[in-house]
Amino acid sequence: MGTTHRTLHNRVLAVLGPAIAAGEYSVGHTFTLSGLEQDFGVSRTVAREAVRVLESMGLVVSRPRTGVKVRPQTQWSVFDPQLIRWRLAGAGRMAQLRSLNELRAAVEPAAAALAAERGSPEERARLVDVAEEMTRTGDAGLLDTFLELDVAFHRHILDLSGNEMFSGLAEVVSEVLIGRTSYDLMPHRPRPEALRLHTAVARAVRDGLPDVAEAAMRSIVTEVSDALKEPGPDPR
Amino acid sequence: MGTTHRTLHNRVLAVLGPAIAAGEYSVGHTFTLSGLEQDFGVSRTVAREAVRVLESMGLVVSRPRTGVKVRPQTQWSVFDPQLIRWRLAGAGRMAQLRSLNELRAAVEPAAAALAAERGSPEERARLVDVAEEMTRTGDAGLLDTFLELDVAFHRHILDLSGNEMFSGLAEVVSEVLIGRTSYDLMPHRPRPEALRLHTAVARAVRDGLPDVAEAAMRSIVTEVSDALKEPGPDPR
DNA sequence: CGGATTGATTGGTAACACTATTTATGGCGG
DNA sequence: CCGCCATAAATAGTGTTACCAATCAATCCG
Image 1 (cartoon, chains in turn green, cyan, orange, brown):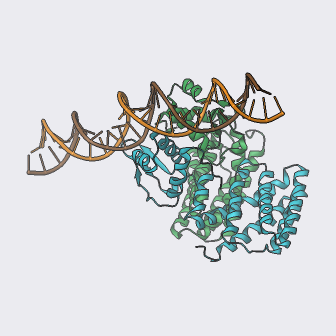
Image 2 (tube, each protein chain N blue to C red; image 1 turned 90 degrees about the vertical axis):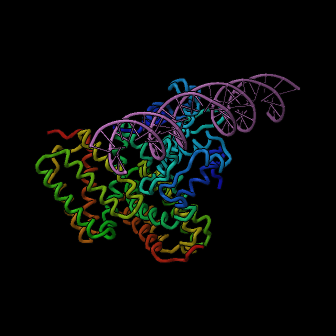
Image 3 (tube, rainbow over the protein chains, first blue to last red; image 1 turned 45 degrees about the horizontal axis):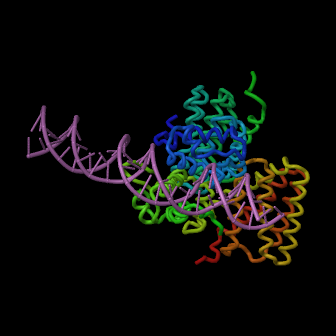
């Protein structure tokens, strides 16, 4: 958790951001700079810098005479990686995971298709290696290593898509995969079907078959979102 | 063009941001705060606030003794609406439009499917009204009104999806639609096929048919991306 | 009821001390 | 004479304080 608390305003953000993101302050609640100065024991400059960042994320607006007002969620920059992290860390975690998974379900199949069309042959071939390694570690029950490979697999496809916006989701997808396992939303042993599908995606990408890659990836992500719809951690 | 130049640091951002986003400063180029103070004729505080915002978008890093360094594009928050606007305004316009369209092609069909499942019957029905109005104005050749309706149509579907991240793309999709017409990347008269498809999406959503809505929307967005792939009238 | 007043709060400037980091220096051992 | 490491100096961001200007919601008064 080496979150960069290098500067003072980042330390203020690390407290204020998650609190606002978690809805601990009602929409319309207003802070004052002097209030923030006192609460955090920082100078005006630092408080202002923190507010500027929150403002650029759409979490608050700052106006003279009014103060720093919390905006409704609909105005937030919901794709900001920092905001996503704050929400994953706090109360909105499940809601955030759900919407992120719906996003994945939409984006990753498209990314797989593009990856099959673009990307160098070597890089596409490397994907098969990762998939096979996943099968090995999955069968062996090496969960930590498996997670790392899973993350690498999905990130690689997003990068191969050649679309910077898809690549930009890699970080977020990683956090979803990690968060999912650490909150027991995953079967403790990877399902054979899932492993088979990952290999299918990899081979289709390697062989330059966009439609096949897209379909296989769609199976992966919809299977996952079905699992998330079920109430709690899987019994049995 | 009412971009909020209310504050001084926003005016600095309005110049610095687009310049960096357009790649006018090579990766690794370093500014100094005192340099920015002089170039823009602002105080240190203002320069620092601008840098803080750029930093939170991943465009630069600020370190002691080193200065404010431009980061490689792979580190940028490519979903930040502000950054997207800057790129659409400048040199990276076509590239940005292309990646945004690929994103739309992935997201909007999924959003249409979700909209058919969720959302109140009244709101879903309203979509049909918009589609029919589009057909009327389209046939009549009222291009400005048609664009407004088109924007409203797509925004409405993204909102009805009930996924805040999809809704969060509404602003961006609007800018794509607007930018597309204002840069002559669209037929000057809406194609009858496109009008028919919009109506088909609307009816499927109203009738609660996710698969039909998804398929029809997919036809819309892939048709558009095909149009973008063609060389087209080179602007400028 | 409408327009002027006012005071709370952010916006902006300036000057200075602190701290981190790079670069240069110098001394020491080989 | 060379190489290496410790140390000092230079430099740029970081943080603090104080003060004044601009804004605007609320209030007061004609």
